[in-house]
Image (tube, rainbow, N blue to C red; front, side, top):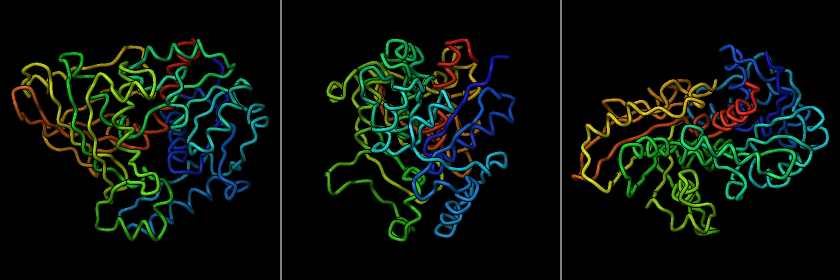
Length: 373
């Protein structure tokens, strides 16, 4: 067996970071014990505390605000780990790979410092998604882009994954592109509150979202970042654009509207997809059902056995969000709208498929490329 890699999780006390810790334990339980978790970092208020204590405090705060919230538990193996600060030298002494669940403003500083010290970074942060040398990875969709890491100049390599909304529907588009020419996508999302992180435990947000549907519009900057990311990130993943500027006029027309609903996990997305030819709903059903990604990706520990699962009904977060441990995109309620247009719903786990579990999957693809997995 290849020697275990030394792994760190940056931002392990945040919502997506806690899921990264849970992922580590689930992989071990499933026999994929290829990484030793050596360090976890957190915000200044968490540093020096045990990881298990932070888990309990944050999850209890959420369950007090929302009756539907089911608290997640820190794996017993990692409860006593001490949360560290972001000291690049100290981190680089202990580990060779990191899963980053940091806020972008923090990732902007620490991720390049770690790469300069030879640490490989697989990041959920948005900060470097549009760096030309950094691939924006959904391994089922663009596995060849992992080759870009070989051309990066820093000793530590980096790959980023996209926004949670992007991750929740682009595999569907890729599956269809194998059989048809997709011309336009109209997207409307119903997003779980966990995508906003632990800030949703605050009184103001909890009061606003209770029994309500709200937007993510930033009044200060006068834009909705969720909508912009949903429209432009697929252009890079699907190979239509290398830069953010190019993505504005990318090869696939995408219009998005996004909203938040009072649900713990799961982004439900309504897609109306136009094709350049007549396409029947039965053909779409078969194309989605039969699609399988590259065999290199299908063999990874974190890849779902069936990356796109098709139902004969609308997928529901409560029933379906943990399908295949939350790494599948669940599709349903396919309808014919016009001869060349269909509609469907897709559902994905926003913290797993849409965040750090995909970052881990990209790391696995890189390890496999290096014959280390």
